[in-house]
Structure formats: C-alpha cells, structure tokens
Length: 359
Image (cartoon, rainbow, N blue to C red):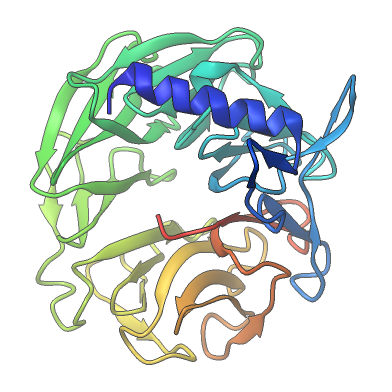
C-alpha cells in the first residue's frame, strides 16, 4: 500500500469519527462496543470510556479499534490512545473524557511515547513515519521515515537516562530492524537486524543499557549494551513449548529483574533478568490462550492482569497473588482487549482498549 493510499483511507476513517455512529453510504458502521473501557474497582464493574467533548457536542470513539494505551511519565491520569483509523486521543482524567490531537497524518497510530524530561514532547508512529510534537500535540512534524513505504514503525522507546536516545523498531515483511537515534529522532542509524519481526523493545529502567525484544517467532532477546549486540534467550526458554512465539513482556515496576513474558506457551516469570524461568499456572492449558496484553500493578506487584482469546471468546484475567490463583473478569464488549493500562497512583482504576479483530 502506498503512503498516499494509506493516508486517503485514514482520512476517511477520521471523517467517520467526527460524524459519529450511524450509517454512511448505506453501510452500517461497526457496533459501538469498542474504544476504551474503565473500571474503578479493580475489574468488578466496567463502563465505556470513549467520550470526546467538542464545540459541536460530545462525540465518541466507541466504534474505534485501539492499538495502544500509552502512559505519561509526568502525569498519572494522562493516557494516550492510538487507534487504527480513528486518530490519536489523549485523556488527562484517566478516561473521563478525551480529546483528539493531530490531523490526517495521525489517523492510525501504532505507538506513542512521551519524553521523560520534556512533558510536551511526544513521539507517535503512523505506518512508515514517526511524528514528533514539542507543544503537547498542537503541531506535529515528521521526524523519521523508513527506507521503504511498506515498512511499519512498530514501537518507539526513549531511554530513561538520556531523552535524546530514541529506539525505533521497524518491521519489514519477515524481518525486524532496530534504529537508534541520539538526537531526539532527527536522525537514526541501524543498530541491529533481527531475523524475524519484532513486537516491542523494553528498556530496563534500573539498568538502561539492558534492553529486551519480543519477537514473533524467535522468542525473547536481550541486549546488555544499549542495543548494539543481542542474544536470543533460546536455551533459557527451551523447556517451554511455544515460548519462541512471543507476545508481551512486562517488567516488575519495583524490581526490574523480575520479568513476566507472555508467549504461545502461556505466561512465564523470571526473577533474574531472564537467566531462569518458571511457568505460571493459568486457568487454561499451555498453548490454549492467545494473550494480547499484560499489566502489573505498580504498587502491589503481585497483582497482574492479562487479556486473552480462548475458544474464540475474549476474556480478562486477574491475580492478586503473583499468579497462584486467577479470576476471570468480564468486559461489556465482544471485542479483543488489546491494551491494559493501570493508573500508577490509583491502581483500582484500569483502562482497557479493545479491537474488533485480531491484530
């Protein structure tokens, strides 16, 4: 797909958001059970949280497919929702209301990250481009383009100890490329080429030279030198069938040596930065659940949520004892819960982004 075709489709999707739910051209739009849902009691009850107040009245992105829910390191109640075709939205009230930022260029946003030093500097990826704003979303400028228009910028990460160091993960068919910028995204160079596509890059906040990469078909990788050299954790995970197909990684917010890794096997835990692993018993058999999102309570790290599809049904699971026992939490949506965000100072408040079909 060319970039122009992509933006034309994105513009149409953005127009549908402004028009609101209903019928366009005689075709019924997606059912309004999407967007974001919120709980204030740890998952017992949920309500839709997709209101967008405008000068023309309150709109909604309740039909939207959410690709990511990104936190703001400067304000605990601020969250960024990147959607597939319905734009980039931000809330400063942990979902009570949202506003749309950016224009046609940000109609579909895969990744969003906020500069850890400059609160109004944000990065967002839209297909093959990275955009940057320095004024809290008022003006966006392209800061990076991939070598080919059919490549996708899958993830953006900013080093916690150097806000000018930006990591970009680019997927090109069956391969992944790590690009590193040392000037805030103005320029970038290839640091490493993975033999498979990469889902995410995570930086250890306590040891920023240590990075983890989750890949589609080669499991979990680790770098100890800020991304120049990488090692696949093949031997460490060889006892767990399916662990080579990775989905999500979460670091313990208090002890970053503790890792939670979701793969085709299920959920695994390491207490030593990936050197050894233990399987976490789930309510489903190994390989039965497709896990889409994973989140750890920043105050009580024995509390975790994960979302999965089991037998064609979308479910949310919660543990308060580090995975010894689990409870199923129902959402008022038939869509897949693709993103989970726990408010750091109010962990009973949780946001879940939904998607109509598998990513």
